[in-house]
Length: 200
Image (cartoon, rainbow, N blue to C red; front, side, top):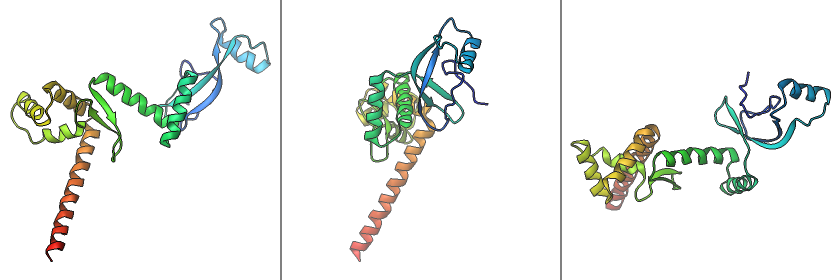
């Protein structure tokens, strides 16, 4: 049985696989559960209901949360998702996730690139670049941070921000580092084959 949220009408049937825009209703503070159900069944005076436009946003395969969006925000969301060629749900989930990341890690931003969106320092490199370079440092934590700060020309606090973010998002950052390592290895092999061809 699907779990209902506190702001979702009891009779709503939201899909857990898509974002649906449905005409819902907000319960009047003086209306009881019996008033709500009897009014629907018997065609009674629907005065306890105040029409609202609801947007169901799926946050996982088994949980759906309904929010009311400002019409202007909804229009902007539609336009941006169309421009990017993605669903409103995908865009909204990305914006919420990235927004929380930037709130929890001041100094972190998200940028688009050839390999997709990635977290980066607002004043410098991508987080995965800092994490990758960290592997080649030695000594105490402070010495390693200082070495990276000098390497990237940043304040040590910026390096700590990147390291903290990488530690919190270890799986994603490790995947980006591994992808870069694989691309670098392929580029090296291509250079060797090119050199061998030119020398023949």
